[in-house]
Length: 437
Image (cartoon, rainbow, N blue to C red; front, side, top):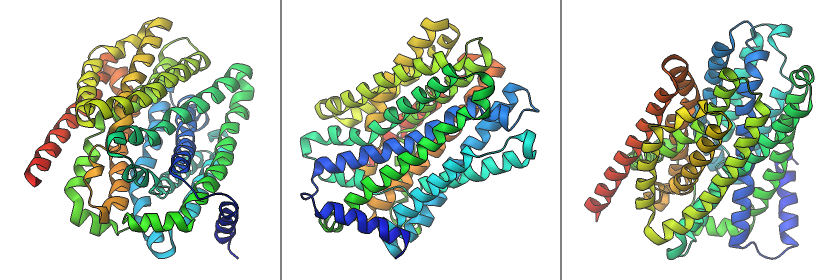
């Protein structure tokens, strides 16, 4: 019996001994899966600021080393659509459980391999090439972690609670950030610089691997059950080829990718970029700012929950449009707060995370809900991949480059462009909806 079959059989045995899986357990599976993915994401993101420039690019000045590190950071977002294409084929040929197991195994292996990465002093430029290879592995794997549970959750949501159910998968982002930031803050704050750069930074990557194992079992426990297999089939949540999906629903994929750009651009402007600015251009150590980031993420978590209530009361479209306008206003003044010491940094992070939570909480279903059922499973995955690529993948490197050369206020231009794209995409989507009606 293959390792995949053994894991799946174990999940089936546990499920068989318990009551039938219910919608509440779908939500739990979604949150666990998303939290594990975002924890991986933020562990790498934090290390790309405070570890890799010194470990992999010690021959460069700190700013250039960080820009190079952010360049490698973006590789995962470029690789992700290719991962979706590859793993959609695996899903169609061998099933959802095989796809998830292989994808999460690749994600865990790539992540734990980074924990053993030798530095430039040991192997020279090969260190950068290995880091790029492992980062591409993470991106390909993330393209295969789409399990359809978020779409299943949305399709089974009562008509008056769609906003509430849409925000549930988004909770994984602040939860993953809280755990990753707290873990790095602990190691940075309690180890000497020598110990941290020697071995302390590696531990969060081992933790990420362990969390992936737990998440894999939790998700398999749901997707392999006969009840949910029938439910996926009855809701027509089956994989279609990427080519076929783009041919039939290409317009919806494009609109779905651009509709959440405001929140996805803001995502990195309040998570990765501020840490790099504080680390490079102030005298503060990273530990204190990581604590501020953790507190900001708690506000973001609350705002995501609130977005569910607001969307159910006023509608998702007005919330997303209003959030995009607020993000555009935020871009005009907020980046300068990062030069305002503890108070300015705290205001920037809390306000940014509140705006992020309100917009990000509803961004995933903005246009993806317009997919026909036949193409919803693959279309939703492609939409997410492209939104992350265009909205977030290059945000840290662009924001840091602009800020370091033209001042902090210039980084707001990236946010402003994302807000403009969101408003345009929402407008076009609404117009197409009225035309179709």
